[in-house]
Image (cartoon, rainbow, N blue to C red; front, top):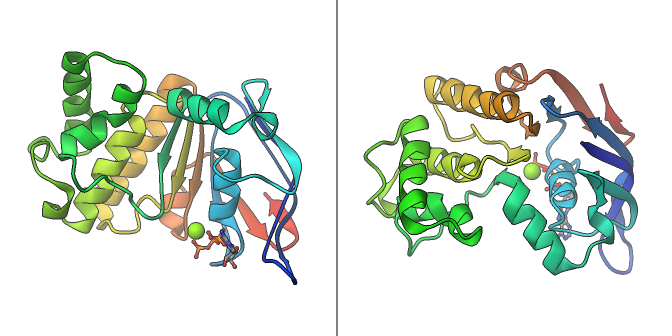
Length: 220
Ligand SMILES: Nc1ncnc2c1ncn2[C@@H]1O[C@H](COP(=O)(O)OP(=O)(O)OP(=O)(O)O)[C@@H](O)[C@H]1O
Ligand SMILES: [Mg+2]
């Protein structure tokens, strides 16, 4: 379902720094992996490339039979919108939208009717333990509550590929466990593929297997 091969990315002008070199990864439907590795090693860079938010210097990302790296930006945007869900390391809720509007955004972008999207967004908020936060604005929530709202937004359109970058960084242990369970259930129930980037061993243990990213590549 997801096949990453020979993926490379360097940053910088005159003296570029090679961050990723020849990365390979294969995920089947229903498979959920954790990626760990030192800060700055390139985990978020890898997720951005898989999502088609950034372009590699070499290699390919095949998702549902389509090479994302060969698509133009408008097609990549559509693919992301329809079939991917993200939880970013920086949470990125829209400050001028209410929480329920934020959560409903992927549905709105996919043309779901207002009434259905309100109902599904409310359900997603209840699932992350925020049944009463819908009418609030993000700035009225705590860091952990914002993170849970971001997770509701990532799951609301039932994505085929779920990418989560340190999704439990701001959460206490019980909330973290709850969120980790939700992410896992989403992958298993929908037969999606899931990638969880984390520094937490406890979080990594919620995935099927753990891969470690180092300067030498991605290893099991
Ligand atoms: N857009 C960019 N321009 C220049 N350098 C970048 C860019 N994005 C990332 N980098 C560099 O690439 C390296 C890897 O960054 P990345 O964010 O992928 O690390 P990470 O493994 O996610 O770290 P952390 O665990 O701290 O989140 C870092 O040295 C970073 O400075
Ligand atoms: Mg990162």
